[in-house]
Image (cartoon, rainbow, N blue to C red; front, side, top):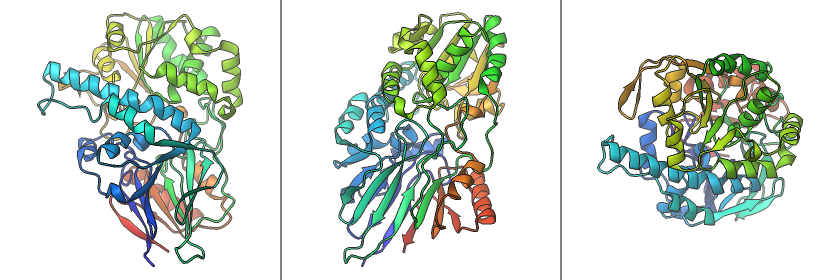
Length: 472
């Protein structure tokens, strides 16, 4: 009998580009299909031919909709993959707006670089187009949570709640050899949600406890070397933003379009309506914002109590008279001519591309302004450089001085921290044969591996890019 193997095609030695190839005697499965983001050497991997034969794939399984887990799908289809893409219902709905939006933004950026001659390539091309993104959506097949599904010969899949973002799930594989008997059981966490409830969270806290024995665990390690602050985010956010807005400044918030933007809107609305900070115009500069909010509001069963209370009190953001959704490039450009006080929420969350790059180029040189980071900033991204104190920074090949104030709030993270990961692991009925750590920078993954082995005495290894391991 051929062996079961697992190969790490992304998010190994880095946070982005999640792709894990599970090969069984009866077929192969790709778990997550994300884009690399951050440093140039990582981004250039996106343009290389995929290190797998797409014709051998039985299926693609997604843990959630974030682009570092789903953004490579249109390119996979371009390389010849025509099979099914399985995901939860919430993830399938979010993909319907997230992928076309990503294609549209890439077309806008390529057009801008060509017009301004800011490219090494003639002409600059989008990684994929909006039309290509819409085409791959035809392959998406929603699955119900917690319902076993026959994925292919000898492979049963169950999606289990991960509490990271709307629709996020673990991919739980139960494998059976061709000759019968018991094969290995392997669980892919995707991104693990928070264990402790936080005022900055939207979803119900706590990923599902794994009550059945698992042979192998592929575990994220984004925050494997740190702990999130355990304080109410509202007062801190108001104290940071209020003086800037009161002085007529502009606040730019690079925000992930899924989850983070929706929570930010309700939290800022509450702070304004309760008098904790001035009531000022807010521009959400994202073509997909309204659609994403509508999806968000349809899934109230996944909200925590605070989020449900805010929605009940203030209604949908589309009805607020001081919030503007900038869907077109012309609307986005018009914001550049507006003076403060003003809040601009724009993607991408790590300033790795998208419209936020233009807002940062314009607003960073003014000391009256403020840039607020509300999520993880991968090394090599513009967001990481700004947050780390680099000055000046380069945007569209231009040197931009950083005179604006910079703030960061780790409380908004939707990832479990190191202590929460350990607490979740303690719920397992027995140790896995081995844990593979992915989706973390080398330092955080190494720290988490050390902590798991020191506290739980479970065998753990940090996955390496393109490494292939044999499973018993």
